[in-house]
Amino acid sequence: MAKKLFVGSLSWNTDERGLREAFSPFGTITEAAVITDRDSGRSRGFGFVTFEDDDAADKAIAALNNTELDGRTIRVDAAQEKRRDRW
Picture 1 (cartoon, helix red, strand yellow):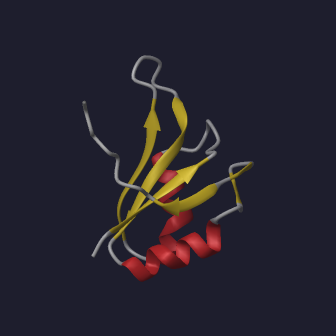
Picture 2 (cartoon, rainbow, N blue to C red):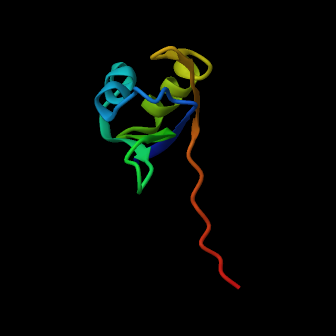
Picture 3 (spheres, rainbow, N blue to C red):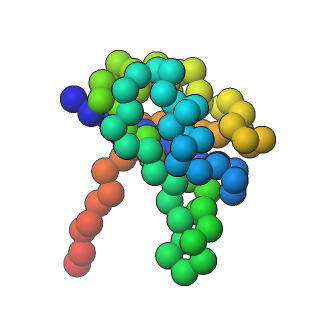
């Protein structure tokens, strides 16, 4: 089963290729995305990496959380489903 990770505190210079390269040693990645501002197109400083395998994702969290990527200390956690509750 696929597992999506949240990657926070990204450098403005980190792109999807760099994110994929940093996480690929831990397993097969099905998607790597840096979230950008809709108006400016600049990175919003976070992204998501989806692994094909839960074990690979867990290894990536353990190995990469609080490590440096492109000059910034990143935070890596399991992504939480966004709630779409409306009153």
